[in-house]
Amino acid sequence: DSGVTQTPKHLITATGQRVTLRCSPRSGDLSVYWYQQSLDQGLQFLIQYYNGEERAKGNILERFSAQQFPDLHSELNLSSLELGDSALYFCASSVGARGEEQYFGPGTRLTVT
Amino acid sequence: AQSVTQLDSQVPVFEEAPVELRCNYSSSVSVYLFWYVQYPNQGLQLLLKYLSGSTLVKGINGFEAEFNKSQTSFHLRKPSVHISDTAEYFCAVSDGTSGGSYIPTFGRGTSLIVHP
Image (tube, rainbow over all chains, first blue to last red; front, side, top):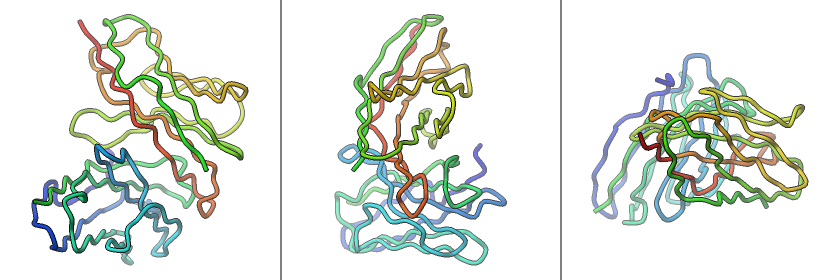
């Protein structure tokens, strides 16, 4: 158990819909990272937040957005969902901003039908 | 731009045999290298990392990796594997330029299958 929690574990929704994935980092960690894992693209970095501020941005679509709240939990919002958005979404956390040691949550499996 | 190539998509091996999982990278600047393991239905776990210093890096669960700058490689080794090592292994590289963060670019993964 990494100490990072993600909810829900599974999510099934239809095309065009919007969903919110939630992540709670390990106690004391200030950084949160979001990753997408799919068969087509492999494991890709989406975005990082550090202490409430966006720190680094990867291949995140404009339809996707994220934020980190004062209690340090983070949410990833996915809108206008397409079939290709079906994937495992991982959250990771680290103590500092550099992220040389990231702890991953168990993931949320999103299925878009 | 940086990229990672994991040369084998699947590596079958018998229990107690040695194993090497191969990883080559490309990057135009300094590199920081990582190996992660993903057990079935779980998130990734950091096995080991190279940031600087000794090129031979020891990690958890008896794994080690060697950074070879001339061959741009970071192969993962274990002298004797167990059934419990069956998992997906990901090599990752970072150039540390993503806002100063070590944001990894991952390879496609190598599935290690340990047979009894």
